[in-house]
Image (cartoon, rainbow, N blue to C red; front, side, top):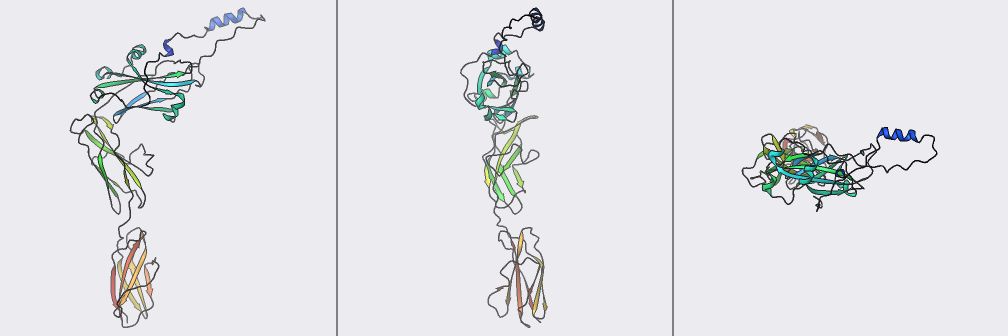
Length: 378
């Protein structure tokens, strides 16, 4: 919340206003002076007062209230708004039973009992603006938890012009906060070859200290830009277990996760605040699967090596080593990776036994287990 107001501002709509001259009187005056050369008296200055809002909403978000209202576009006389000076927010705490009907109470009664909690000057409105809406958070600072969950909060806003005038309060929006769990903790990740397995510890109590935690599900949020967490979770419906398998990732990318709890009573579910951020940069340390059906066929002084490729999708190629009964160490047949699924070894000697071994190599340099075959050249 921004700076609190120290005293109530008397809205101009409660003060006497100058009303337009009635049409019949204007016509009479015009006819009386027709044909006269006298210049008419100057007209009173045009009064430009933004129209009152009619779409204010108030919703619980975690442990605070989120207000949304459209910015004024038109004045009461039909001209575009150009003189908006500030937006004032009022709040009235009342017994929840008295607000359950969401009825509107008279403006003078609301003004007498409500507290001005925020005044936003025109130059700071962009800080609260989301497209054509003003989005305002009431963190309910200074109120005890015991009070927050036993009261209903009624809100209204004023659009005030540069002459301290307002057309009246907006519609009144009422919200009753429900007790929800604390956010999850101990967010962790287990990296596998095909998924990032995210887990967390469920909260043990609610925000007011009551137990057990009223958990109805979880939401998980993911982003690659930690300054811009999305407002829509990755899961399409609430998760019922404290775990999530993310299969949409790439090795060496960096991903940030936050988790919330959905809680409350009955069908009234509210999302908790988000957990701390978990940052994961998965590395590929997983070897690919080996090749299948590795065979050698001798054709004179040439050995034709054949195999079925590794089923792993990230294989870049293959390496083949050869060792004969006369060699103490194996020999790499080609420095570069072999991209094909066959290879011709043209440097063999008849009557000698050879052992060939092949490994698959993935894009991160991981090697599969070797597959070997022995044969004697004819």
